[in-house]
Length: 129
Image 1 (cartoon, helix red, strand yellow):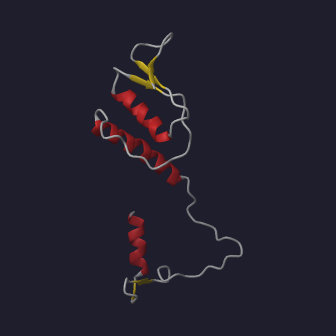
Image 2: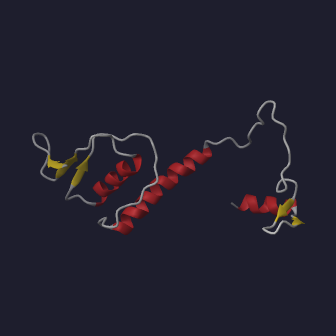
Image 3: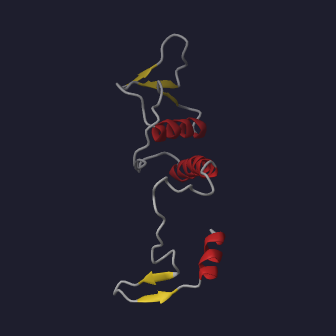
């Protein structure tokens, strides 16, 4: 339900009334829409912190700009989260470390044969990412 704000609001502000907090994706989408359109300002109460798979509506105004801004926002958040990950994982106590074929320098093809992989080559590819 969308309603025009009364006292204290302006005529271009619209409150979106929902029974639950919106998701973080919708929260950011509404913020981006408000940035890209000064004629209408959408207001929601709050958002929760659970992320779910979503698709942006196909009818978005200025869709190219909105999608690019959403990618920038969530890309920077993802980059920040990756920066907070530990560089090396400590083994779990009592867990024996065993080498898989991949970590031992071999790979299994779809038909089951193996062929050696140069460990240096594999390391260099990982550093490029």
